[in-house]
Length: 357
Image (cartoon, rainbow, N blue to C red; front, side, top):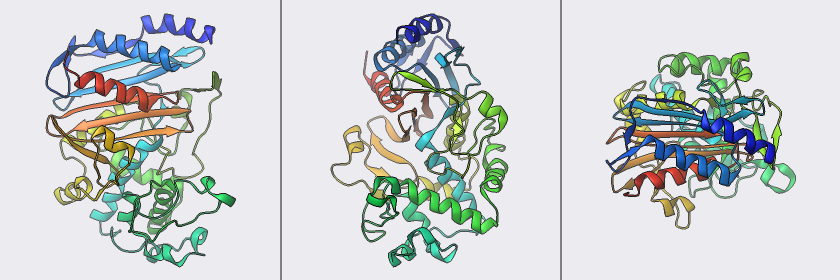
């Protein structure tokens, strides 16, 4: 631990920072000096044993500030090219991708997925035949988050689909298989379509669900339980719709900018993607942060300074992250880390930015 943070002290002092201004706008419309943000991050990184992070902030629909701090691997600092696992921020990006299929008439959000592709893993429960893409993207399938969370490690349905809310990665993985079935392809083929339909048109150079050599060569090591973990080819055996995206903070920020500008989808698709789909149940922890509803794949809430959309991610406390964007002011942030504290850091930073100084 001493060795880690002695290295961190050196790297934090020479962090790679790209900024178009010494001060930037906050979500509440005030300005803040970028050095205040750097100081806040340095303190929080040390307090949470987070070795490395990448942050990109958007002002007025443009990247205004990017900072890469700390260590990507024991012997190399985080840079603008460092690849992080995006974990569950995969879900809203995948939802955007799904709308491309809807636009082309290949998928109906309200047609049972069973009619596209029967699913042997849950064939023992006939209720699965009512599950639709809309239910998947709003966590109403009744599936657990992961089957490994259940006794016997078997996929189950905990309530009649469409009658309740339960966060589930399993549903997203089923929908990814459905898309592969529609296209008569495999995970690699679905990745190729994602690159063609989403990543390349929106300049997401490094954003991939199935990794290539370049992404893996630039991928950060994760840091968990006080030790570094060697490079992992995590999720490359399936299209990880729920967890598998790898990206940089600036790359992912480019996608948020596309959302702010209504690019990549038609008007009807954007309306469907971002409108209120369900209200989160009472007691859901997101409600304490003002997040009250789900759209398709996004958490959303009406905050005093505008409607905010976002999502966090945590892959087994190895990589974690958070993004938030506000269409009204075209403000956004993407924070990626190689520790299990990215959501905590992201929420802390967001609160810091919206607190009047």
